[in-house]
Length: 220
Image 1: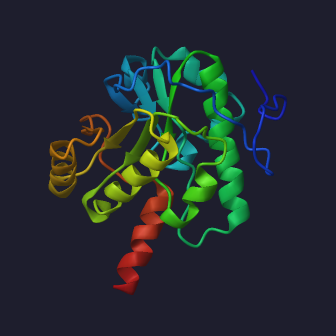
Image 2 (image 1 turned 60 degrees about the vertical axis):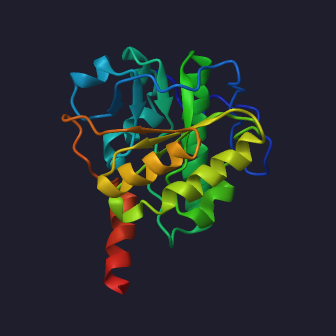
């Protein structure tokens, strides 16, 4: 079992957030099926790609035991989506970004393709991208109809970070509005791939996002 405090990866920022490895030699296609970690003990072994758009408690243990994910047969992983809400203090955002990027680098070193998680409030994207090299090509976000308008914003974030290199934005979940937005963007020639929820992973926003949506409803 690895202690996540034992390894210090190279960093290019003042907070020591680890740098991801360059993946320009890795495929930009989504390895199917995409499975939410903790959806069931059975299906994780069937995963092509593992994602973490679920409650934090379902994946918190990976911080102290990141090897556990390697017991699956997945070839790719989306970074853990630690809860960040609109009014999170920057220190929490930095710490959660450190954890997601440390785990991502650990899994990269083990041979997995990593997808950068962009499902955070837009005003924290500058922190969320710390440690992601320019020219990186694999990005992912969770979607549901209440935030379908965020997809194009996140695509723009991915495009800027890709810096002229080929890239893909994976969009996981969503209903009719998300389907329509993704279809239109694909018709426009944008490199976006929508992945539907599997029946054994119910469409449900993560803990932090549900809190954010609840606050938005209260202010409407």
